[in-house]
Length: 148
Image 1 (cartoon, rainbow, N blue to C red):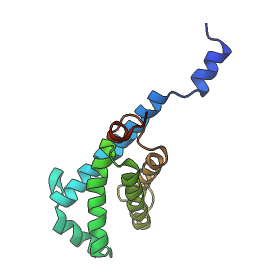
Image 2 (cartoon, one colour; image 1 turned 180 degrees about the vertical axis):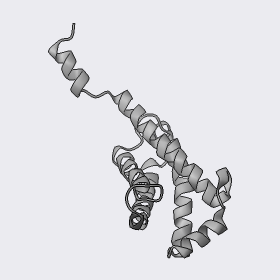
Image 3 (cartoon, helix red, strand yellow; image 1 turned 90 degrees about the vertical axis):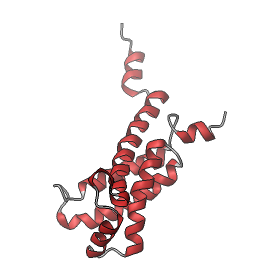
Image 4 (cartoon, one colour; image 1 turned 180 degrees about the horizontal axis):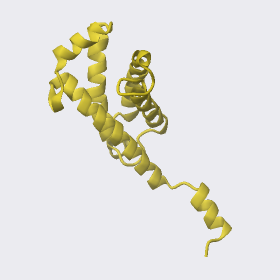
């Protein structure tokens, strides 16, 4: 029989293991996608164009060469670190900055649509959530740095 307390727990309670699992899923979603996109930009993997072509494209968009390199490697390395949960807050911070710039850059194309700002904006929000929450239990950070 469901008591008022059980209903309150189901509707309003939280569970540390489920929160850690939820954050793991968010980290994996953003991390894997950014790693695949970044590895395409940096290494030409997964149908990407490689670093030289990507940098030339960024320069045509008006982005300075050092910032173009920084953006590519932030997606590549930051995505991997987020997926692993290693140096999670640092990676999330770098990705959040990268995604704010990407959002602003894409806004002239509108918010929705294939070239709109909604994609980087979504990643910005996920990166902020990961930054605020930290890696939680299911991460390399937790395994390496957990204090008992």
